[in-house]
Length: 420
Picture 1 (cartoon, rainbow, N blue to C red):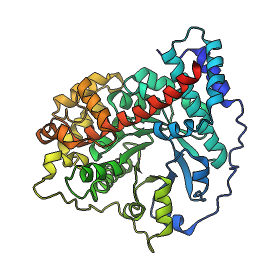
Picture 2 (picture 1 turned 60 degrees about the vertical axis):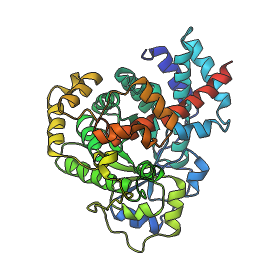
Picture 3 (picture 1 turned 120 degrees about the horizontal axis):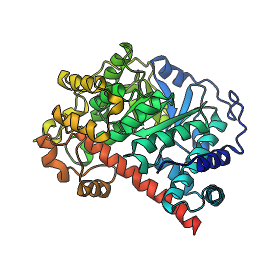
Picture 4 (picture 1 turned 135 degrees about the horizontal axis):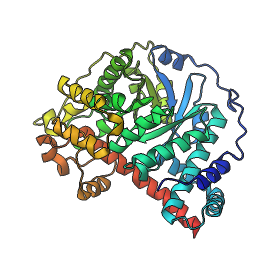
């Protein structure tokens, strides 16, 4: 169910109770840094991908403008025990506001409190924009995505971006949020075609390529050395999104996410945004390029293992955006998109022969992806990838979502333990 007015007000007041931040006055002393100034000059905005305040403070300079969190990063902070007291306080306030609330909805609300409170702490420390993520239980529900997304943004409209997962319901929910003025970071993207669709249909502030996981999929499954897979997908996405933005068709910018090595900072200079894990930022800062040319027009080569063709694992779905696909997306965006349901969105893509973008995953598929973890086991999906029944981008999206859902479940379990 969507949240009631009583619980919305109670949660909002609890989260904001001790928030006295003066915008424009960070707690950290952020000095300029010539290394990061050079990257910014190439056209890339700099975010840090961490929820650890001290870890971020050690790297923060005047060139950084945002931090991004997710279910995994928030879970790490919650598991440290720093919010145990807040859990009990939140439970009491919510139960008072809405007696008889189900345990499922109570866990969802307390998770919301933790996410929002931690986001506010990041705002206070850095005076930065902070990307905060919705609970994974909302991923297939348009109405609740919109309701919780609006609530989360309202906690700190001056600084919060709302992360919504790229799913059929997520796209439609993100579209409604964006139309309501909520800046959306549409997360869990892996390909240029996913981002072409997302940029035009949802019109979010940001779309993503989780590049490191793409490289790991190829390397871990011995399909090649993994080099440049994520980079090629990221640069292809950058060109598509930049062209759409230049044509006035979307406000979206591309985030190069899931970075794994400092070398990627130089190799992808000119991508709209980097969200860098601290170790990546530290690596690059220790060994920066003497010059930082923009690389958005590069198209790096991908080498597969002997006997392996890119078609064997549907690699082309990561960076190819054909005129036929563009036409299918254009038709979607012109045919009353605000009345679409998630199922209708999937059906229209199937009718256009692009059912591999959002396959109709079975319960067994979801269990398999959850068991695989962040990186799918190629052998389990080989035949369907080779046949074009599923795209590699779609498979990586499924695995990433269930990886985050696993961490969300761990966070929910800690909350539940403190309510007993």
